[in-house]
Length: 112
Length: 114
Image (cartoon, rainbow over all chains, first blue to last red; front, side):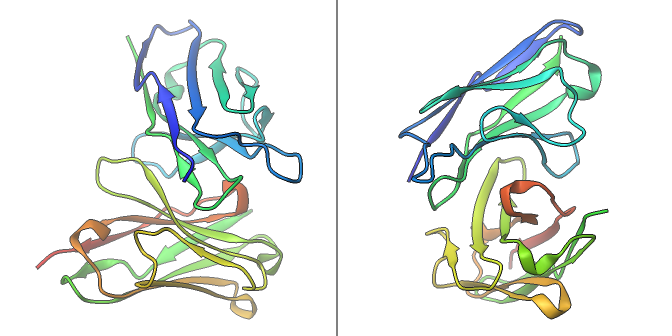
C-alpha cells in the first residue's frame, strides 16, 4: 500500500499569513496513464470533506485562488497564500493512483 | 446541483449487519465511479471501497474485504454498502463520494456496540 505522510500534523497560523503543508508518498504517484492522482481535501469542523486540489495543482470549482498545489513524484505541497478564518479545519492529501486509495493523517490548521 | 445523501446508519451489535444507501442527484450517476470512505470518531479518513460506473470493477480495503459488499443500481441512481460481521472498529461516519472526491455526502453514522 502507498503510505501518505503529512507534515506538520498541526499548524498554528496568524490570520493573513501564509501556510504550507507537505505530503510525501512512499512511492511515486505517477500513474501508467501519465497523470499523478494526488489531491488535497479540506474538512471544516463538523462538515464532510471537500475537494480543493486535484492532480497536484488543479483548483476545484469554487476554490479560492489563495490555495495552490505543487510537487511531483513523491513530494507534494499545499500552500495557502493568506490564511483566512474560514480556512480552519483539517487538510488531507490523498492518492488515487493505486488501490487501495490512501490518505495522509491530516494536518490541523488553526489560528494563533 | 450535485447531491449525495447517505442513509441506513445506526446502532448494531458486534456480528450484526447493516445496509447503507447513497442517493445521487444532479449528475449522470451511471457515468461515474463511486466510493465509500469512512471516518472513525476523532480520526482521519479511510477509503473503504470503490465501484466503477458499470459495476465491472470493484475494490475493497483489506480491513473490510470479505465482510462488506459495494453495489449500485444505476436505474435508481443509488449506491449501496452491505456490511456484515460488523466489529467495534467499523464504528465511523460513512461517506459516499463521487470519483476523484469531487462530491461528498453528509455521511451516516454507524455504531457497533453491545
